[in-house]
Every structure is written in C-alpha cells, then in structure tokens.
Length: 281
Length: 279
Image (cartoon, rainbow over all chains, first blue to last red; front, side):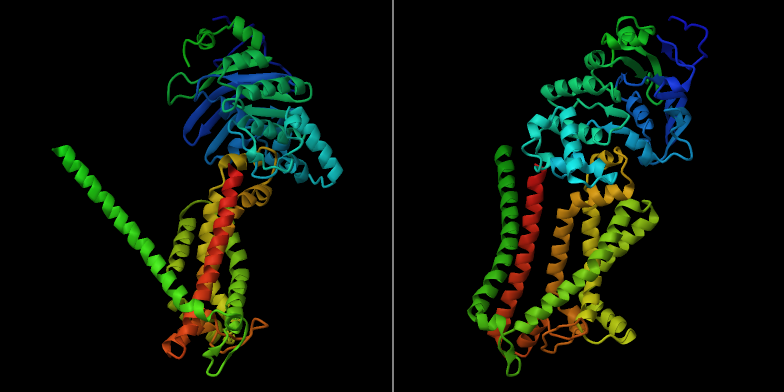
C-alpha cells in the first residue's frame, strides 16, 4: 500500500490518490471523520472526503457498504429514518449540515435527490415538474410553462412528452419516469443533485440519456451518483470513492477516494483493485 | 390407488368451496330479487315525488327520501373533516407508540358498538343532556359517531398505502412535511379516501336504530338542521310493523337499496379509475 504524502493529516483507514483540501471553501462537501449509526449499529466509520464543485463524483462498492447511507447524510434524508445518528464534520458550502440552525427543508432545496425507484407523483407530467417551483410560490403560468419546458429539455425528456404534458406521470415508462424525476429536481435549480442508483431499474436507452444529461448539466450542478455499475462509474464520473464493509456487522469504511482515472487505472489499495477488477462484490 | 384418493379429496374440497361461494351469492341475490319483485311494482313518479297521505301509508314517500339524504349529507359534513384530520395525524404525525395503538383500538371498538346503543347514547347525550330537538342535527351527530371510525380507518390505510418513495421524492425537493402531506400524499390517497367516505355514507343512509332515537318520525320536509323528519328506514319499519301497506314498505326498501347500490357503484368506479391511472 502506498503511504500518503506526509502533509495530509492522518485520516482514518482511507487512501487518497489526491490530497484532501485544507480549506473547506475548496470543496462543495467537506467531510471529516464522519460516523453514522442506525440505532446501535455503527454503519459507517471515520469517513473523510471532499466532493468537488461542478464535477461528477461516483460512490461505488458492494451492496450494504454504506454508500447510499452516506449519500443520504448529504441532504439529511436520513433524518426521515428513526433512530439514526451522525457524528463528525459535514460541511456543505462551508456551512455545517447538521448545525443547530440548519433547516433540512432548506438544505434539500439546494441539494436535490433522485432515487433508485422512479417516484413521480400520481399527477400530470406538468404538475410533477411544476411541483417544486410552486412550493417556492411561483404561480405565474408563463413562468411555470417556461420552467417546465426548460427542465424537461435538460432532462432529455421534452421531445417525448411535449404533446402529453397533461398525462399522468405514472403512465410513462420507467426510464421516462426517472427522467421526469430528474426534471422535477432540476426545476428548483439545486446546486447539487444526489443520485442513488438512478439507473438500476430502467432501460438502456434511458440510461444513455441520463448519462448524457449528467454531462450536459455538470457545469451548472454538482452531481454525486451512487452506482453498482463500475462501467457506469468509469464512464460518467470525474471522481470516485470506494466504500466497503469487510465484515458483516462491522462498520463500513471509505477505502479509497480520488480521480476516477486514478482509481480505475492505478488504485492504491489492493481491495479497490480487487473490486474494480471484479474479484468480489 | 392413492392418486385416485388424492383426486377424490381434491374434488371434495373443490365442491365445498363451490357450495360455500354459491350460498353467499345466492343469499345476496335472493334478497335483492325478493325486494325488487315485491317493490318495483309500486315505484312510480308519484311514489317517489309526492307526500304520503291517509295514515301516512298511502301516496308517496318523498319527504322520507329527502330526510334520509339530508341527514346523511349533514353527518358526512360533520364526520369527514374530523375523521380525515384524525387519520392524517395518526398516519403521518403521531409518534407510533402505545397512544396511537390505543386510538386505533378505540376506533375499531367504536365501529363495532351496536347501532341501537349508539342511538341510545345519541338520545341521552345530544337530546337529553344538550337539549337539542329530535332533528336532522341530532341524528346527524349520532350518525357521525358511527361514520367516524369507518372513515378514519379507511383514510389512515389509504395514507399509509402511499409509497415511501413518493414521499421521499417530495422531501428530497425541499418540501416540508405539511407540503408533502397536503400536496402529494393526500391527493395520491384521495381515491381510496373517497371510496371509504362513500361506503360510510352507504352505512349511514341505511341506519335505522340511530335515527329512530334521534330524528323522530314525523313526516316532514326538513329545511334547517333543527327540523325533524322521518328517514326511509324508519318509514319502512313503521309500514311493515303495522302491516298497513306492505307494497309501499317493499317499494321503500327497493329505493333504499337502490341508493346504497348507487353509492357502492360510485365507490367502485372511483377505485377502478385510480387503478387505471396507476398502470
């Protein structure tokens, strides 16, 4: 195992192929020594990580490795699960995510989320996309029309649905539904989009369209994607973090983090190499 | 050998199921056909749209139809907001613990209180203690006690039935709990909530014991809630018990069943439309 350059403080069990930033201002998410519990179960331990602005970061690892759990810390979706607890430093745009003055509702407006299961509301396509802007008090029809069109267009869905905006979102195919959900999130102009295995339940054409749109929007939006699919991580991401739970019942760790090209061609940790070459997981 | 025996057992079990199912369906159809055959002959515009005369046994039953619809509508207005809000609280806000279990148990118990007891309570409470007259209002209040648990439990189930993923979609966009509940969860659950409301209405409009104690039995066209009246089931009961006009009793029964059938049909249609939307 290659030892890190000495100027980085000793950070848990993780290997970094690029040193972590010193100044929190240089990272969109600045995470140090994060621990996470479901009740008594310590699910994640000592995770330190930077998420770079306007880049695509992939979280990879086998099932149960805590990557989705970690993702949900970033917009406090774990708050919705009873009995969870977080410790450590977790800054978004230099502000403490779990700070006492932080409203998770406000945070989630800035850090949107896409789920594994496409989850359009049982309403029209238009109303789905207009949901967020309406929450923010936008009532003007022309303004809403413009937002709906722009968001659907960014989500590579406009051409398919422009004639059927009044149709129920549930009438679309799974892949179209997922793009509808992406449009819905884009409509509130978040700074970050968290994607929790967005492509694992949909058709290949839609996967292609989603990967395309990720590239198209990344200069406006920071994207973090959790994926089981290593080819996808290699294709779409600029940075990759590899999570692993080595022993069932023990906490998962962040094994390695760095630029995707480094992780995939020149991994530091043997376990990373084993995973990306498909020797386990 | 044993294969043949297995097959015999199988056929025997199958015929038992058929017989059981047959008895159920036959019971339903016998009742319906009996009432229709005996009642349909007296159904004329005069019967539906005019007042009774003589000893209230001849002529039409118009005021009783209006009284029934009036009291059911009023009971809906009273019971629905309370039951729906209670259900939203139970399903979305209440900490799931012993208190919620007690509330749910209380609701289920309330639903199984015999209606004659509910009528007696309505009489003692709304009329004797609160001094309300025998009226639409008293009967609607007592009926709403009957409807409350039905609406509350169906609404709660409907709200719980909305997938967690859909809620997360809303929370994940920075919606508050109230925004999520009011704009996503309740609309998604609405068809099932409406189905529950209509089933409760069907239950209320056919209710006899409760209105017997609380509405009185005067033939009257109710205008304001404190007016008294005679509901269809009461009219039916009085006609039949005194044996003064059995055909009119069956006619009333037929109309009552038709009303309830229409309610159930509407409930079904809404449920089916919802299912279609989901596909």
